[in-house]
Length: 161
Ligand SMILES: [Zn+2]
Ligand SMILES: [Zn+2]
Ligand SMILES: [Zn+2]
Image 1 (cartoon, rainbow, N blue to C red):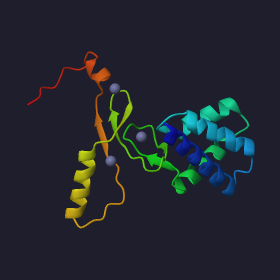
Image 2 (image 1 turned 90 degrees about the vertical axis):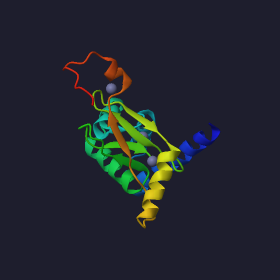
Image 3 (image 1 turned 90 degrees about the horizontal axis):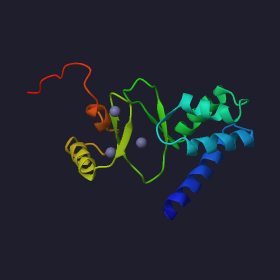
Image 4 (image 1 turned 180 degrees about the vertical axis):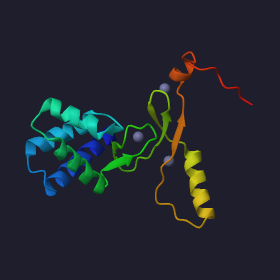
């Protein structure tokens, strides 16, 4: 927990310095966007963040938020996800030395994170067998979460072989 707090502080300082260097001159806007970034939770869309920021300060334009997101992605401080849930690009803070993959519910759009050492190992092995040195991967699983599969089916259940 202490490590996590230190890591968050470090990440926040790094984010602030990139934002300052790359042209977001207003200190108060920088602080506000940072506060919202840390509060909003994982896997947010640009629209989520814009709504959040503008609720606190309507003078911050959406272009500023878009520009900030872009520069943070380019600096590697934010991860960009393209999930097949039609919500567009989702963003997530990149905490170094931390890795997880995602499973997404096709009914309600819920996104859960997981880390499975066996999958990670197998991916390494596959890459090695193909003569690749693995740099990164995205692994996304799609299905229906327990809440959604418990709900009464709207259409007749397809028979499983
Ligand atoms: Zn993984
Ligand atoms: Zn669901
Ligand atoms: Zn995630």
